[in-house]
Image 1 (cartoon, rainbow, N blue to C red):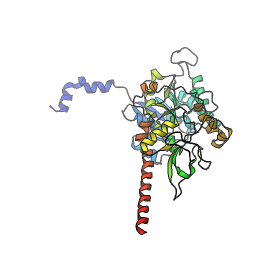
Image 2: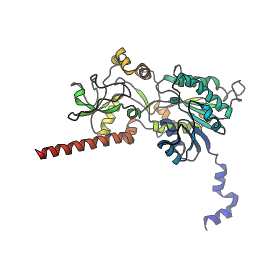
Image 3: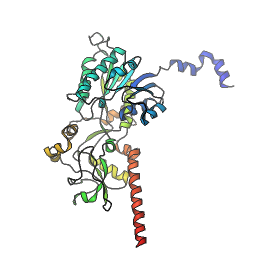
Image 4: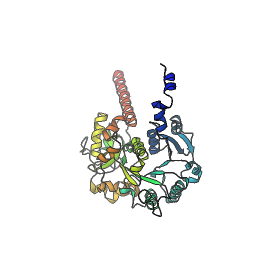
Length: 388
Protein backbone atom coordinates (compact mmCIF):
# COMPACT_ATOMS: atom_id res chain seq x y z
CA UNK A 1 0.00 0.00 0.00
CA UNK A 2 1.36 3.39 -0.96
CA UNK A 3 1.82 6.15 1.62
CA UNK A 4 -0.84 8.27 -0.13
CA UNK A 5 -3.44 5.48 0.13
CA UNK A 6 -2.50 4.87 3.77
CA UNK A 7 -2.89 8.57 4.58
CA UNK A 8 -6.30 8.62 2.89
CA UNK A 9 -7.41 5.52 4.77
CA UNK A 10 -6.37 6.83 8.21
CA UNK A 11 -7.72 10.32 7.56
CA UNK A 12 -7.74 12.54 10.65
CA UNK A 13 -6.41 9.66 12.77
CA UNK A 14 -3.12 9.61 10.88
CA UNK A 15 -0.51 9.85 13.68
CA UNK A 16 1.69 12.07 11.55
CA UNK A 17 -1.11 14.59 11.07
CA UNK A 18 -2.07 14.40 14.75
CA UNK A 19 1.55 15.07 15.77
CA UNK A 20 1.76 18.02 13.40
CA UNK A 21 -1.42 19.54 14.87
CA UNK A 22 -0.23 19.09 18.44
CA UNK A 23 3.30 20.44 17.81
CA UNK A 24 3.79 24.02 19.02
CA UNK A 25 4.22 26.74 16.46
CA UNK A 26 7.83 27.84 15.94
CA UNK A 27 8.85 30.80 18.09
CA UNK A 28 9.57 34.05 16.30
CA UNK A 29 12.81 35.59 17.55
CA UNK A 30 14.68 38.74 16.54
CA UNK A 31 18.47 38.55 16.99
CA UNK A 32 20.26 41.87 17.28
CA UNK A 33 23.74 42.28 15.79
CA UNK A 34 23.24 39.00 13.98
CA UNK A 35 26.59 39.29 12.18
CA UNK A 36 28.51 39.57 15.46
CA UNK A 37 30.01 36.46 17.02
CA UNK A 38 27.26 36.16 19.64
CA UNK A 39 24.38 36.90 17.28
CA UNK A 40 25.69 34.57 14.59
CA UNK A 41 25.99 31.72 17.10
CA UNK A 42 22.43 32.30 18.30
CA UNK A 43 21.06 32.28 14.75
CA UNK A 44 22.84 29.06 13.78
CA UNK A 45 21.90 27.18 16.96
CA UNK A 46 18.20 28.02 16.86
CA UNK A 47 17.76 27.14 13.19
CA UNK A 48 18.82 23.52 13.57
CA UNK A 49 15.62 21.83 14.76
CA UNK A 50 12.89 23.93 13.17
CA UNK A 51 11.57 25.27 16.47
CA UNK A 52 12.22 28.91 15.57
CA UNK A 53 11.71 31.49 12.88
CA UNK A 54 14.69 33.83 13.06
CA UNK A 55 15.03 37.44 12.00
CA UNK A 56 18.53 38.90 12.13
CA UNK A 57 19.14 42.63 12.55
CA UNK A 58 22.23 43.82 10.69
CA UNK A 59 23.57 47.27 9.78
CA UNK A 60 24.31 46.15 6.23
CA UNK A 61 22.72 43.21 4.43
CA UNK A 62 25.40 43.20 1.74
CA UNK A 63 28.22 41.56 3.71
CA UNK A 64 29.56 37.98 3.54
CA UNK A 65 28.24 37.11 7.01
CA UNK A 66 24.80 38.59 6.32
CA UNK A 67 24.60 36.69 3.04
CA UNK A 68 25.58 33.48 4.84
CA UNK A 69 22.79 34.04 7.38
CA UNK A 70 20.36 34.60 4.55
CA UNK A 71 21.51 31.33 2.98
CA UNK A 72 20.76 29.62 6.31
CA UNK A 73 17.16 30.94 6.12
CA UNK A 74 17.58 33.83 8.55
CA UNK A 75 15.34 36.69 7.48
CA UNK A 76 17.63 39.71 7.31
CA UNK A 77 16.47 43.07 8.64
CA UNK A 78 18.54 46.22 8.16
CA UNK A 79 18.58 48.69 11.03
CA UNK A 80 20.84 50.86 13.16
CA UNK A 81 21.54 49.45 16.60
CA UNK A 82 21.86 52.92 18.10
CA UNK A 83 18.46 53.89 16.69
CA UNK A 84 15.82 51.38 17.80
CA UNK A 85 13.19 53.38 15.92
CA UNK A 86 14.75 52.12 12.67
CA UNK A 87 13.57 48.59 13.45
CA UNK A 88 10.74 49.24 15.90
CA UNK A 89 8.12 47.96 13.45
CA UNK A 90 9.95 44.62 13.34
CA UNK A 91 9.29 44.02 17.05
CA UNK A 92 5.57 43.48 16.53
CA UNK A 93 4.67 39.82 16.62
CA UNK A 94 8.00 38.66 18.03
CA UNK A 95 7.95 36.04 20.77
CA UNK A 96 11.48 36.86 21.84
CA UNK A 97 14.52 39.03 21.25
CA UNK A 98 18.20 38.37 21.86
CA UNK A 99 20.26 41.41 22.88
CA UNK A 100 24.05 41.14 23.20
CA UNK A 101 25.44 43.67 25.68
CA UNK A 102 28.44 44.27 23.41
CA UNK A 103 26.31 46.66 21.36
CA UNK A 104 26.10 49.02 24.34
CA UNK A 105 29.49 50.65 24.75
CA UNK A 106 28.95 54.40 25.21
CA UNK A 107 27.08 56.56 27.75
CA UNK A 108 24.67 57.52 24.96
CA UNK A 109 23.86 53.86 24.36
CA UNK A 110 22.23 53.60 27.81
CA UNK A 111 19.42 55.87 26.65
CA UNK A 112 18.63 53.97 23.47
CA UNK A 113 19.13 50.66 25.25
CA UNK A 114 16.44 51.49 27.80
CA UNK A 115 14.25 52.77 24.98
CA UNK A 116 14.66 49.45 23.17
CA UNK A 117 13.56 47.49 26.25
CA UNK A 118 10.44 49.64 26.62
CA UNK A 119 9.69 49.27 22.89
CA UNK A 120 9.79 45.50 23.36
CA UNK A 121 7.19 45.74 26.10
CA UNK A 122 4.92 48.00 24.05
CA UNK A 123 5.22 45.71 21.02
CA UNK A 124 4.22 42.67 23.06
CA UNK A 125 7.57 40.85 22.89
CA UNK A 126 7.30 38.04 25.41
CA UNK A 127 10.88 37.24 26.36
CA UNK A 128 14.13 39.22 26.36
CA UNK A 129 17.47 37.42 26.68
CA UNK A 130 20.29 39.82 27.46
CA UNK A 131 23.98 38.99 27.83
CA UNK A 132 25.84 40.77 30.61
CA UNK A 133 29.32 42.21 30.18
CA UNK A 134 32.10 39.62 30.11
CA UNK A 135 34.24 39.48 33.24
CA UNK A 136 32.12 41.78 35.41
CA UNK A 137 30.92 39.94 38.53
CA UNK A 138 27.14 39.45 38.28
CA UNK A 139 27.03 42.01 35.48
CA UNK A 140 25.84 44.64 37.96
CA UNK A 141 27.35 47.40 40.02
CA UNK A 142 29.15 48.51 36.92
CA UNK A 143 29.25 51.89 35.23
CA UNK A 144 29.52 50.08 31.93
CA UNK A 145 26.46 50.83 29.74
CA UNK A 146 25.57 47.15 29.48
CA UNK A 147 25.52 46.86 33.27
CA UNK A 148 23.22 49.88 33.57
CA UNK A 149 20.75 48.46 31.06
CA UNK A 150 20.84 45.10 32.81
CA UNK A 151 19.92 46.81 36.08
CA UNK A 152 17.10 48.70 34.34
CA UNK A 153 15.62 45.45 33.01
CA UNK A 154 15.64 43.83 36.44
CA UNK A 155 14.34 46.87 38.31
CA UNK A 156 11.56 47.69 35.86
CA UNK A 157 10.33 44.31 34.69
CA UNK A 158 10.62 42.02 37.70
CA UNK A 159 7.70 40.46 39.54
CA UNK A 160 5.16 39.53 36.90
CA UNK A 161 6.00 35.82 36.88
CA UNK A 162 5.17 35.01 40.52
CA UNK A 163 3.46 38.24 41.59
CA UNK A 164 0.76 38.97 39.05
CA UNK A 165 -0.93 41.53 41.32
CA UNK A 166 2.07 43.85 41.60
CA UNK A 167 2.19 47.20 39.76
CA UNK A 168 5.03 45.88 37.59
CA UNK A 169 3.16 42.64 37.22
CA UNK A 170 0.92 40.97 34.70
CA UNK A 171 0.24 44.10 32.66
CA UNK A 172 3.87 44.16 31.57
CA UNK A 173 3.95 40.67 30.09
CA UNK A 174 7.68 40.96 29.47
CA UNK A 175 9.88 38.16 30.74
CA UNK A 176 13.65 38.44 30.90
CA UNK A 177 16.60 36.13 31.28
CA UNK A 178 20.12 37.37 31.96
CA UNK A 179 22.93 35.34 30.46
CA UNK A 180 26.39 35.77 31.98
CA UNK A 181 28.90 34.47 29.46
CA UNK A 182 32.49 33.86 30.46
CA UNK A 183 35.69 34.73 28.64
CA UNK A 184 35.48 33.80 24.96
CA UNK A 185 38.13 31.29 23.91
CA UNK A 186 38.05 32.89 20.45
CA UNK A 187 39.63 36.05 21.88
CA UNK A 188 42.95 34.29 21.39
CA UNK A 189 42.37 34.85 17.68
CA UNK A 190 40.26 38.02 17.50
CA UNK A 191 42.52 39.95 19.89
CA UNK A 192 45.76 38.44 18.60
CA UNK A 193 46.60 36.92 21.98
CA UNK A 194 48.24 33.87 20.43
CA UNK A 195 51.01 34.30 17.88
CA UNK A 196 54.69 33.67 17.19
CA UNK A 197 57.49 35.95 18.33
CA UNK A 198 61.24 36.02 17.69
CA UNK A 199 63.24 33.80 20.02
CA UNK A 200 65.68 36.68 20.45
CA UNK A 201 62.88 38.63 22.13
CA UNK A 202 62.36 35.98 24.79
CA UNK A 203 64.42 36.05 28.01
CA UNK A 204 67.18 33.46 28.19
CA UNK A 205 65.84 31.86 31.36
CA UNK A 206 62.30 31.21 30.15
CA UNK A 207 60.92 27.66 30.35
CA UNK A 208 58.52 25.86 28.09
CA UNK A 209 55.70 25.13 27.89
CA UNK A 210 54.89 26.41 31.38
CA UNK A 211 56.25 29.01 33.73
CA UNK A 212 57.50 31.24 30.92
CA UNK A 213 59.28 34.38 32.06
CA UNK A 214 58.44 37.97 31.33
CA UNK A 215 59.09 39.10 27.79
CA UNK A 216 61.32 42.03 26.97
CA UNK A 217 59.62 45.35 26.45
CA UNK A 218 59.58 45.10 22.67
CA UNK A 219 57.14 42.18 22.85
CA UNK A 220 53.85 43.87 23.73
CA UNK A 221 51.51 42.64 26.45
CA UNK A 222 48.71 44.93 25.39
CA UNK A 223 45.47 43.14 24.61
CA UNK A 224 44.73 43.36 20.92
CA UNK A 225 48.12 44.74 19.90
CA UNK A 226 50.07 42.54 17.55
CA UNK A 227 53.16 40.88 18.92
CA UNK A 228 56.58 41.47 17.38
CA UNK A 229 57.01 39.54 14.15
CA UNK A 230 59.78 37.29 13.00
CA UNK A 231 62.83 38.63 11.22
CA UNK A 232 63.90 36.59 8.21
CA UNK A 233 67.01 35.21 9.91
CA UNK A 234 65.53 34.68 13.35
CA UNK A 235 63.90 31.67 15.04
CA UNK A 236 60.42 31.93 16.54
CA UNK A 237 58.16 30.36 19.15
CA UNK A 238 54.48 30.42 20.01
CA UNK A 239 53.43 32.85 22.72
CA UNK A 240 50.13 32.97 24.61
CA UNK A 241 49.58 36.57 25.66
CA UNK A 242 46.54 36.40 27.95
CA UNK A 243 47.22 39.38 30.25
CA UNK A 244 46.73 37.58 33.56
CA UNK A 245 49.02 35.79 36.04
CA UNK A 246 49.72 32.20 35.02
CA UNK A 247 47.66 30.58 37.80
CA UNK A 248 44.54 32.75 37.44
CA UNK A 249 41.32 30.79 37.00
CA UNK A 250 39.33 32.21 34.08
CA UNK A 251 35.65 31.32 33.52
CA UNK A 252 35.76 30.36 29.85
CA UNK A 253 33.38 29.21 27.16
CA UNK A 254 33.09 28.84 23.38
CA UNK A 255 31.11 31.72 21.90
CA UNK A 256 30.40 29.45 18.94
CA UNK A 257 28.04 27.57 21.31
CA UNK A 258 26.40 30.57 22.99
CA UNK A 259 23.24 29.98 21.00
CA UNK A 260 22.70 26.66 22.78
CA UNK A 261 22.17 28.41 26.12
CA UNK A 262 19.96 31.04 24.48
CA UNK A 263 17.92 28.34 22.76
CA UNK A 264 17.40 26.50 26.06
CA UNK A 265 16.23 29.71 27.74
CA UNK A 266 13.66 30.41 25.02
CA UNK A 267 12.34 26.84 24.91
CA UNK A 268 12.13 26.57 28.71
CA UNK A 269 11.03 30.12 29.38
CA UNK A 270 8.95 29.22 32.44
CA UNK A 271 12.03 27.73 34.07
CA UNK A 272 14.45 30.49 33.12
CA UNK A 273 12.30 33.64 33.24
CA UNK A 274 13.49 36.23 35.72
CA UNK A 275 16.61 34.20 36.27
CA UNK A 276 20.31 34.09 35.52
CA UNK A 277 22.17 31.59 33.34
CA UNK A 278 25.94 31.28 33.51
CA UNK A 279 27.63 30.08 30.34
CA UNK A 280 30.90 28.65 31.66
CA UNK A 281 32.27 25.38 30.36
CA UNK A 282 35.52 25.45 32.34
CA UNK A 283 37.69 27.33 34.80
CA UNK A 284 41.07 27.44 33.07
CA UNK A 285 44.38 29.19 33.73
CA UNK A 286 46.71 30.74 31.12
CA UNK A 287 49.22 28.03 32.05
CA UNK A 288 46.68 25.28 31.34
CA UNK A 289 45.76 26.95 28.04
CA UNK A 290 49.42 26.96 27.02
CA UNK A 291 49.75 23.27 27.83
CA UNK A 292 46.68 22.42 25.74
CA UNK A 293 47.88 24.56 22.84
CA UNK A 294 51.30 22.90 23.03
CA UNK A 295 49.67 19.52 22.50
CA UNK A 296 47.43 20.76 19.69
CA UNK A 297 50.26 22.56 17.88
CA UNK A 298 52.82 19.88 18.63
CA UNK A 299 55.18 22.65 19.66
CA UNK A 300 55.93 24.38 22.98
CA UNK A 301 53.83 27.40 23.86
CA UNK A 302 54.94 30.02 26.36
CA UNK A 303 52.89 32.31 28.56
CA UNK A 304 53.72 35.86 29.59
CA UNK A 305 54.81 34.56 32.99
CA UNK A 306 53.02 37.39 34.77
CA UNK A 307 52.96 37.54 38.56
CA UNK A 308 50.21 39.12 40.66
CA UNK A 309 52.61 41.85 41.68
CA UNK A 310 53.31 42.69 38.05
CA UNK A 311 49.64 42.62 37.10
CA UNK A 312 48.69 45.11 39.83
CA UNK A 313 51.61 47.43 39.16
CA UNK A 314 50.81 50.91 37.88
CA UNK A 315 53.18 50.41 34.96
CA UNK A 316 51.30 47.34 33.74
CA UNK A 317 47.91 49.01 34.21
CA UNK A 318 49.06 52.00 32.20
CA UNK A 319 50.65 49.85 29.50
CA UNK A 320 47.52 47.76 29.08
CA UNK A 321 45.02 50.59 29.41
CA UNK A 322 42.89 51.03 32.52
CA UNK A 323 39.56 50.12 30.88
CA UNK A 324 40.85 46.78 29.58
CA UNK A 325 42.80 46.17 32.78
CA UNK A 326 39.60 46.57 34.83
CA UNK A 327 37.92 43.82 32.80
CA UNK A 328 40.60 41.35 33.88
CA UNK A 329 41.02 42.58 37.45
CA UNK A 330 38.02 40.67 38.81
CA UNK A 331 39.49 37.43 37.51
CA UNK A 332 42.94 38.25 38.91
CA UNK A 333 41.37 38.93 42.32
CA UNK A 334 39.48 35.63 42.25
CA UNK A 335 35.99 37.12 42.38
CA UNK A 336 34.40 34.73 39.92
CA UNK A 337 32.47 31.79 41.29
CA UNK A 338 31.30 29.72 38.36
CA UNK A 339 29.96 26.18 38.22
CA UNK A 340 30.80 24.47 34.89
CA UNK A 341 28.71 21.45 35.90
CA UNK A 342 25.60 23.62 36.39
CA UNK A 343 26.28 25.09 32.97
CA UNK A 344 26.66 21.57 31.56
CA UNK A 345 23.20 20.60 32.83
CA UNK A 346 21.77 23.22 30.46
CA UNK A 347 24.13 22.49 27.56
CA UNK A 348 25.56 18.96 27.96
CA UNK A 349 27.64 19.31 24.78
CA UNK A 350 29.53 22.42 25.95
CA UNK A 351 33.21 22.46 24.97
CA UNK A 352 36.04 22.86 27.43
CA UNK A 353 39.15 24.70 26.23
CA UNK A 354 40.80 21.60 24.84
CA UNK A 355 37.72 20.60 22.86
CA UNK A 356 37.42 24.10 21.44
CA UNK A 357 41.10 24.24 20.50
CA UNK A 358 41.02 20.90 18.72
CA UNK A 359 38.10 21.87 16.48
CA UNK A 360 38.79 25.60 15.97
CA UNK A 361 39.13 26.35 12.27
CA UNK A 362 40.92 29.60 13.09
CA UNK A 363 43.57 27.86 15.18
CA UNK A 364 43.95 25.19 12.52
CA UNK A 365 44.52 27.92 9.94
CA UNK A 366 47.24 29.47 12.12
CA UNK A 367 49.07 26.17 12.47
CA UNK A 368 48.64 25.33 8.79
CA UNK A 369 50.10 28.69 7.78
CA UNK A 370 53.01 28.15 10.15
CA UNK A 371 53.69 24.67 8.77
CA UNK A 372 53.59 26.06 5.22
CA UNK A 373 56.09 28.77 6.12
CA UNK A 374 58.38 26.21 7.73
CA UNK A 375 58.23 24.04 4.62
CA UNK A 376 59.08 27.01 2.41
CA UNK A 377 62.04 27.88 4.64
CA UNK A 378 63.21 24.28 4.50
CA UNK A 379 63.01 24.22 0.71
CA UNK A 380 64.84 27.53 0.48
CA UNK A 381 67.57 26.21 2.79
CA UNK A 382 68.00 23.06 0.74
CA UNK A 383 68.27 25.12 -2.46
CA UNK A 384 71.01 27.25 -0.91
CA UNK A 385 72.89 24.11 0.15
CA UNK A 386 72.70 22.71 -3.39
CA UNK A 387 74.01 25.95 -4.90
CA UNK A 388 77.04 26.02 -2.62
